[in-house]
Length: 367
Image (cartoon, rainbow, N blue to C red):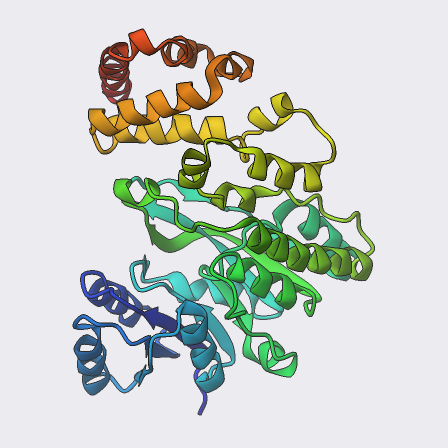
């Protein structure tokens, strides 16, 4: 008899977290599932860990393949899945023991979505409740479309198979969002369950690095793919076309701006999407602004990494590139002091004092 749920876990360089991930799945109170571990040619001990679990528990099935990326691993899982429903869990994350019970509340729907909690901070995201069917699907498109992750959701395997919905293997970012958009195009009902039982591992160091260095042509390609899906969603559900925030422009590498000594390339890309706006609009865009992204990196170097030298180097680069443009960027009142420090080279020594005071303030707030 086929299991209720097929859980697909792509595995690559996850030897430190894989056991915790698998153990959390095997401890589910709902035991009607199969666990598909897809070893994507991991060079560490993941292969042996996967095989050990498969030997101990009949619900665990393992596939070993050459490295091809997370999308190829997930696609293999989709090909061999036997469950009525399909769920995805990343190998560095885990789930609460009641995670699969979320599905009970949405068995009559095409897509079931829960929220998630970050670890170690315990922050909660997408903790919503809602029923969307037929003529109310437009409300979902307008309010909840941008939860683009595939984890924390349950998909009907029959819909995935019938419409051959797979992950694109020619992208390094937003493949999750495109997968979800393709799936929602085939849905007639969606259930939001207010339970944050997916545990997303988000350690402090994880947010420091820019994950991908996308070139302008790659960004244009992704935008065109997403834009096409949004147009079709608006047509199918007779709703306003979703206003897609061009947030993947944030993946344009800051290192490229430093190397070129200019953000012209990024600005022209921004104008292609937003229209003919001046640079002050660009620099104040909370998502796309390279100035705000530089400032975020500087703060992280000081507060998270505690690396003053790199923080100062970034601050000098920021001041050199943008000079008085920094005055045109809107900050919170607390950050105006930080803004003043950045404008003048001579004041960079005050960065140390600024962040020392900020750290103390944050400590007192927690007490």
